[in-house]
Amino acid sequence: MERLQEFFDVHKIEKCTYTELSASDGNKRKSLIYSEEKEAYSFDQITRLFFPKIWPSSADAILFKGETRIYLIEFKSGFEREKFDLNKCKCDYKGNVCEDYAELFKRSLDNINRELQANLFQKAAESRWILEKHLLPQICSDEEQIEDIKVYFDIVIDKVKDNPIDAMEEIMDGLAGQARSKEKSSNIYVQMQQSLKKIFCENCFTGKPSFYNKAEVLSKEEFEQKFLKHV
Image (cartoon, rainbow, N blue to C red; front, side, top):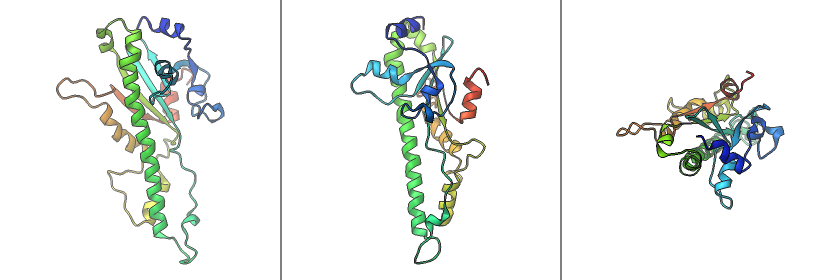
């Protein structure tokens, strides 16, 4: 990737802080990570360089480690639930919990999670396409060099790792009279890591990964341990 810095200099692309990269809609007061270290680039900015009018979905950040490792990083809020008030499920007529309301509320939670995860998988797929078909040919000298590069996709979410069980989902399951199966764990990290396997499983003929060499779901604390120098 000897042409990397030249490419970024020409197009005035500079490293950003993780506070900037993880900001919600550009609002640094609502960043997922607070760090002034400048190690990664905005992958959204790079995507819009190639597609200035209608741009694909893309990860928030791209981090280059040495000559052969690239990390695409997506920061995602919305998984940490507020404390749930059971009184919201009480029926004025029955005087106790309404099972029908509990069931509808539970479906709403499931739909929110599915939408969040679908959005992440779309970003994972389109980011890989942008990287391989558009950015790497600009910064690598030949196809062989591209083949040597290992690409990783990390999703950083706001769910507290020490409390990974979505208590609200379990409450709503109980109120709706449904048991949550082992396959449908309330641990969001288990759910998402299981789903992510499809984007780094190996092709049985070539041995190559489908999209990424590895994909992980990280808490804020795990991200800091993995990427921030001062931790």
